View (cartoon, rainbow, N blue to C red):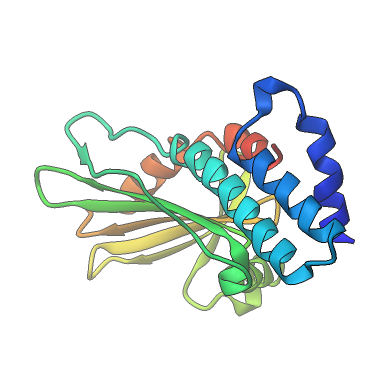
Length: 195
């Protein structure tokens, strides 16, 4: 059924403006399916899904913020998990460093099994342990902070499909975590997730 839905999607993108490797791969999968070559059709369909995820990956990479004044940032990293590994999700991340040795890493993961444990804590704070519930720009999250080690993290779940983690090491205070978390455009991220 899922295969047929994806094949039906092909007809939505048949104009030359959308002709690309994804469409070619979906058409090939459709042809293989019609010939009864199901294994090859699934292989080709998985290839098309990978190409689509690469396009999603590029969109998500663009959503990670630029470094604050005085900080530097590494390249945006990204990967997609194939098939059933980690739910077939997408991961993007970027590490930020200050001249005095502070480090913050922002990571966004879609469709990951990790979501269920964070969502469970958000719905039942008694499971939280040392963390505490927070709200950042209207989104619910969990803060964990270790003042002795000057490290901590904030985890936020968007649309029950994305886990965003802002992780800090050797930071002056937990306010640094909030400064970075507030730089994320949640509306834009959610819109991209629904595209």
